[in-house]
Image (cartoon, rainbow, N blue to C red):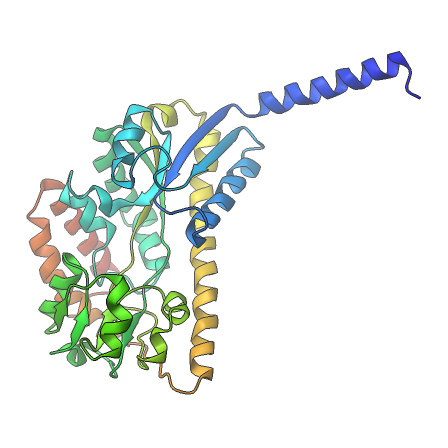
Length: 341
């Protein structure tokens, strides 16, 4: 039986631990995602929140909120600026209505052949500085970028390069994606994702811009379209991690550095995780004996970028920031030999 003194001592220790635990958390960030609860990307974002807690010894806590929890996905930028949210984890293209430059930097169709290329552009090629230049007038600070990965391409016919796109009936969303494929000689049509399987099955289309290889495989698209292009060559969204600038500025430098490092580490973790799932799905598709996976050469990818460039040039005219995005992107691609001569 515990004595009264022991109970008092234990009670004091417990109170002390609770107090120290409470003191450990100095900064709380409520960050809304553009992904729903249960979605793979959202689950990974929750892991990022735990990474931040560990990296900062509990001083910074991230409370992740699924899409729509506080405001609509298209309203998070304003909500972060107003302090209603502390940050967002979202596709930058949702804010192209405020400045078309957000749409261009979010998905310069055809620019990237891997997540690592985009990360390098953001971290060392001027992308991060450009994002902050564009976001700071809206009261946000851009910490870093991640992505759910490069989309694969679904096709019923062999596609080994740009020439094979000519006349191809394909599903592509309106906007930059359709414009680039049309410039490459394809015949894009706008269909909702829910109609892709049926349209492929009935021959309404021969190919589709849809999703990552593992998602396409899980939805049975390779059961009717035997010639996927993987890795993809066209579409990969930039997902930004940004917070309220005043709240960012109030952080000690060591915590700012820790948060920046956490996003860099998370971006690799997320892309590696999804890549592993895609590779497993590729092996599963090949094992079925019907699928031939097509991997475009660096030369063909560069040709597609050069075609896409004509549409980036048009998009650059939309705003002063759009021109800055275009100039920075072209400088990076040329420096790294990623454009056809």
